Image (tube, rainbow, N blue to C red):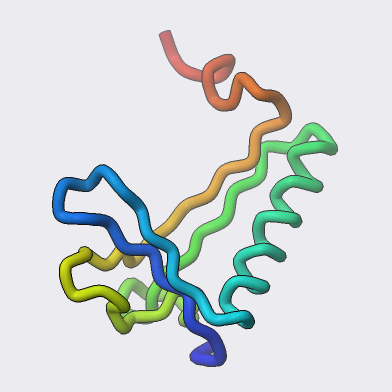
Length: 93
């Protein structure tokens, strides 16, 4: 699926996340988010994985760094939660 640019990178202190995308990559990511939102709104607990090809994906994430001083992220897992409490009601105590 090398038909778009979508990378997630973090700074050297792991305090900032940078998302780089071309129009097709950003639209792909937006569709993923909208799908998760619809399922969460329906009371489901959806999640999705985005992988680079190096990590076994179909190229959901691009592999070429966009900034040399940032570290690539090869796996992004996005959760959808039905309420603003997120995962807290389901955390083990």
